[in-house]
Structures are given as structure tokens and as C-alpha cells.
Image (cartoon, rainbow, N blue to C red):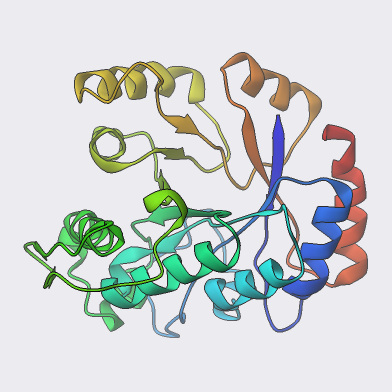
Length: 275
């Protein structure tokens, strides 16, 4: 089983350069970063985990800039987002950012896709909350048009682009795309429609959800191989990881504290037993 990590990198934590080097030296599989552009003070949306919203949400580094720094000092470490709030991005610009990072890292990038939970943050980006899932699907389709080997246009309900020269291209012409979210019927249908797999948070209830996901995948005619399933933000223990293996999961993203060098390295040393 491949063990990757996720962390809220901020202006007060370990740097992406130091973390990337430490992860690769220890044999971890990848680094996945979340994103929040800002957290409005006057927000009304409750924190999904309950209680006050942790400080790091409002201090998060730009994921693509941080991953680029980590890419520059590593050779094998996987790089990804957990997750990118696609509806909050200009899709033409995002397609360029993703393709550039994938190109410069030698094809090491994975796009984790999120629909968001903070209504106020999304509103400042002009996102119509009730339509955000449709917006995400539209923007993924537009980005894939720009990544196509030959110029091709795309006209959707929320975004469009003319047939264009757009380089660099992602290695192999595509980017692995894992869709986040709880295992409701809309999320499973969207994974089957345009994702390469699922990125659930924590992994609770996977035993019940996986048969439904695989059935949706087959119903969509996606082929016998099945979707990738990569649980994220996992607090690991031997029993939990063994259960994931029994479910056929071969990659897990474990959670690091949003902390300085000494605390992060202590946690990595504790997690090394699972490599």
C-alpha cells in the first residue's frame, strides 16, 4: 500500500521544500495539498467537522505554488491536491497551471476535485451554490479540451473555449482526476461519469459505499478495471490500513498536523511504520 500525506501548509508551518525532501527520503508516496483562497470573517457556514474553524483554513498556502516548490526538490514524490475547489477557478487558467505542474514534475500530478463546503468563500468567487457541481463538471470538460492533442473547442453551460493552441500538455494527455465528497448518489454518479476515482475523507463507511460506486462505474460503461479509491486525511492505525487493503485499496493519504518542522517530522517518523 502506498502511503501519501496531506497537510495544511501555511506561513507558519514546515515549508513545502523541507517537507518534500523529507517525504521522498523516507519513502512516502506523495504530497496532497488542500486549498482555500480566503475565509470570510462574517461567514455563516458551519465547519463540517464541528466546533470553531481551525486557524489554518485562513492561512493556507496556494496549493499549486507550494507543490511546484516541492516538485523542484524531488524526483519521485507524487504531487496532488486534496482538493482543488474547481468552481472557484477560471478553468482556462487552471488548465494551464495543472498542465505546467504536471509537465515540470514529469507527470507526477493528481487532481483531487472538491465541490466546496464554505458558501461564503464560494460566493466571493461568483459561484452559484446550487449549481456548483454542474459548474465543476463543465470546467473539467473544458480543461480536457485544452489538454487534447489537437486543438478542439468546448462550449458548455458555464464555460467555453475556442479551439486553441495550449501547451504544455499533461504527460500522456491526461491528468488523474479523483473526485471528493460523501458517498451520495450525485457524487458516485459524477465519479462514474468523468472521474478516474474517488477521494473520500477518512474512509468511514467504505465497505457499504464501494459496491455502489463500482455498480455506478459499470452502469456508465467505464470498463472492468474499476475506479481508484484513495481515502484522504486518514489518521492511520494498523487495523484501519489492513481493512483498506482488504477492500482493494492500494493508496491512502494520511493527515499531518499543520505544524512546524519538529512536530511534522515526529509524525512522519511515527507513520513510517506503515510504509
